[in-house]
Length: 333
Image (cartoon, rainbow, N blue to C red; front, side, top):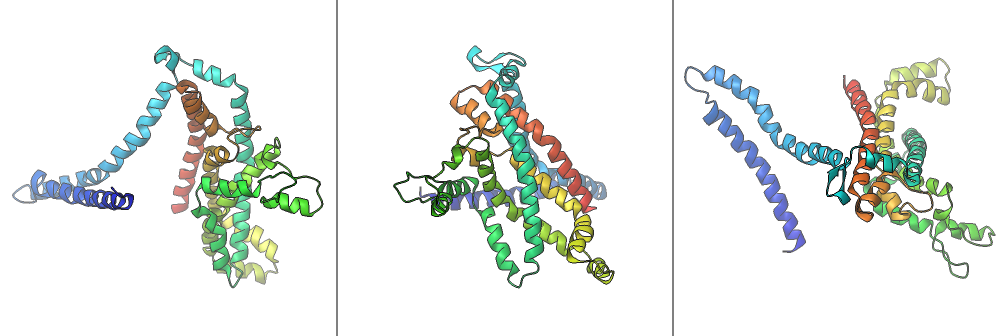
């Protein structure tokens, strides 16, 4: 079957199935299970209204259980077993093995470095872009260009930036823009940017910052537009300059939104995999937790240590996710 036709059939069956489920389940609830007729009509209506939300939530709850809750429980179980021993229970042996590996601590160190740099830079650049583009006549065009990387997959962005960092022998023309600029400034030879220990992590971070700046800009731009004009006008009347207005008037009023953006990007950073996998595959001291997990699960075929690494990632993400939800709910009140 042609892929386009297969996709169309999938959409029709999927959407039609959802509509059919909600319509038929609603009819069954009102016409068969609790019919609104006879002496018990009022009580049946109340019962139906109590069950209806759960009936409508059932597909979502089933999907969450199947694709979220079950994988977490199964991953925890696998992290406590040994594949080579036929799936025998080994307790914390996989965790002990993982903690003894230098590559794991390299991944932890790099993830912490990403956590410090990427959310801070993405939020700062996004806030700066939101403030400046609102002052431009062609600000919407600028926002579209800054937001455009969000439409690119992480792998696609990694391929683009890998070409930026590309290195060719000195006797060949450089297609990597960094090396082309370097040689035009008089350097004797090109640099292999992605193989420079420690600094190559920053070259990888630049890709995620480039992508996430657009996300931060859109959210923070909406927050800035929601600031009451009266407070800004009052500050101007009191003689405040633009920097004082921005840092003392605007920033405090959107602090909650800044925290939400920061924590959302932090969650993305903790799960970063595509960029590292496509650009360095964790070589040259660029390993991160998600790539380490992939190496263990699919290259070393060690489900125990790989699942243990997955549990570590989940443990690191969960507190930030809870904090993010808490702040988002507080913003809605």
